[in-house]
Image (tube, rainbow, N blue to C red; front, top):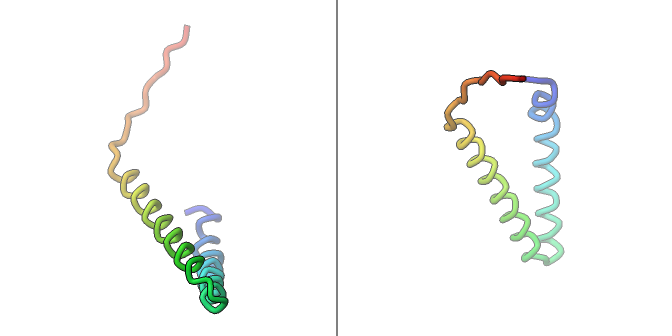
Length: 71
C-alpha cells in the first residue's frame, strides 16, 4: 500500500463522508428533495461503478510479459 492510499483511507475518506452527509442534510432542510435524491443516486451509481470495475479488474486473466523484438 502506498502513502496516498493510506492517507485516503485514514484521513480523506471520513472527511468526504462527513461532507456528503452534511450536503445531504442541507439539501433536505432547504426543501430541495430532488437535489438530495439526485446526489444520493449519483453517489450510489459511482459506488456501483467502482465496485464493478474492481471486480472486473480482479477477474481479468494476467497477461504474461512479451518480448519486443527490435531491428
